[in-house]
Structures are given as C-alpha cells and as structure tokens.
Image 1 (cartoon, one colour):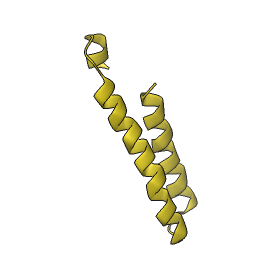
Image 2: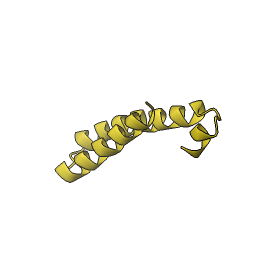
Image 3: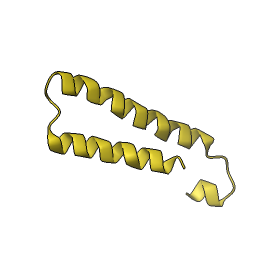
Length: 57
C-alpha cells in the first residue's frame, strides 16, 4: 500500500499475489487426491486464495 500511495508501480506485486493464489489452488488437487485435505485445511487454503485475489484488485 505504501508503494501505491507513493505512486510507484505495483504490477509485479499483483502478479506475485495472483500467481500464489493460482499455485495454492493447484496444490489443493494432490492433497484432495491423497485424502489429506480436511475441512479446516481446505477452508484455510481457500481463505488464502480469496485474500490473494482480493489483493490483486
């Protein structure tokens, strides 16, 4: 947020947050396949994804 207020470019930060959100979704697939994805873990992972995607707006 400090970079945004200073007028600096934040495109790289947005790209990193978007990439991490996509990576988290992809990483949930093997966890689900091997039945390691419990309810709380899925909720936490989805919360991280939502936070990352909302940061890119």
